[in-house]
Length: 103
Image 1 (cartoon, rainbow, N blue to C red):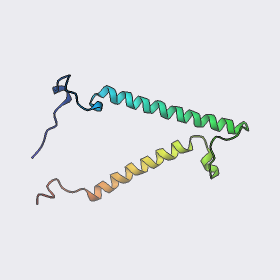
Image 2 (cartoon, rainbow, N blue to C red):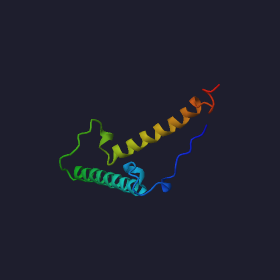
Image 3 (cartoon, one colour):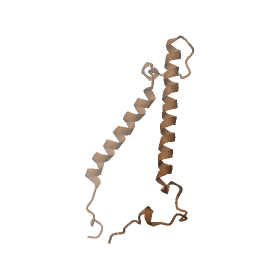
Image 4 (cartoon, rainbow, N blue to C red):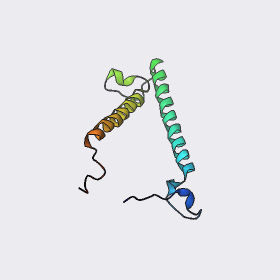
């Protein structure tokens, strides 16, 4: 038994579906997220420059390696990448056949 998902182009304009059914809204959301990430990254660079100039630090890292510019951005990216690849590896071990529960 297969269910086919209807295509968004087959629906009328006044359908009133979910807010993110429109691809333009997804692109806008992703653009906003990129802008926010760029601003936070720039503020981290500014903090690093201010620290090197002898100004008081805006952040208070517990360890010396946490004070590097954009450390949390790189750390978050590496953690996210590790989670994704770990999930891919685990999927191979726990994935079952399509008719597993029908047997």
